Image 1: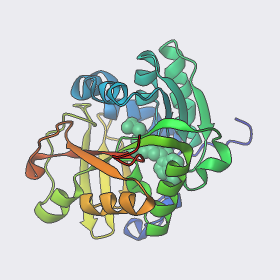
Image 2: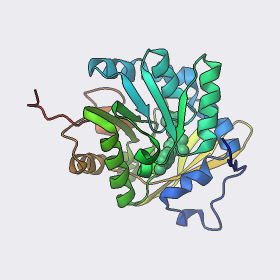
Image 3: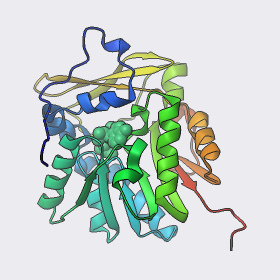
Length: 271
Ligand code: SAM
């Protein structure tokens, strides 16, 4: 990628708790953090935790042409490509996309990658997709409501008339209302890595990630409430939203770490 400047270290400035910006993810996924990301998510453990959930769901919905808009290091793009889906891999952070491409190659797959920010997705991503996946608690990086609305509208526009958006999020309601606890089984599975909130208020969840070599990284995220995300999706035009808790249709909100929302464009009575 020409003109790419890879950032070496995270930079939250003098007052990290003041950093509440949608653009800041670009400064958080630095080269060294990206190098460590796969220790954090542990592909094997994550594959076991998720099972065939996304593959089976997309097959059941009859979707084939998939846009992975928050590729990160490529876990879902690779899983879906291996399962036979036609996948296009997008991320706004070049460091992540480079790693995703390398991981694809190591798995025998040449990922089609596009560097694009969700808020201007259709400027760089052309064509219409059966499904968009935005996974790994990524939507939380948008701090302003206008950015969330803009991103959802761009996702909506990139979908075919009966397309579906699959977007997940941490159970921030639980963290905000009751404090943090996690089964640590689904997304962040590396057992040598700790991922914990260092600070939480109504508009910031700052997580600290500590690795076995004692290196420490942070992510500043917006704590999304479940009903709020669903309301935004409805307001953008998605007709039917089904929410799963830790990959189950029946779940206890007090025991759930992550939600997956499946937002469909089609009206129920469409022929
Ligand atoms: N899906 C991957 C996973 O589960 O391992 C990565 C998750 S990581 C928490 C969030 C990803 O979203 C990062 O790769 C980041 O660069 C990307 N991202 C955040 N905000 C974005 C935006 N506005 N446009 C495009 N990508 C964005």
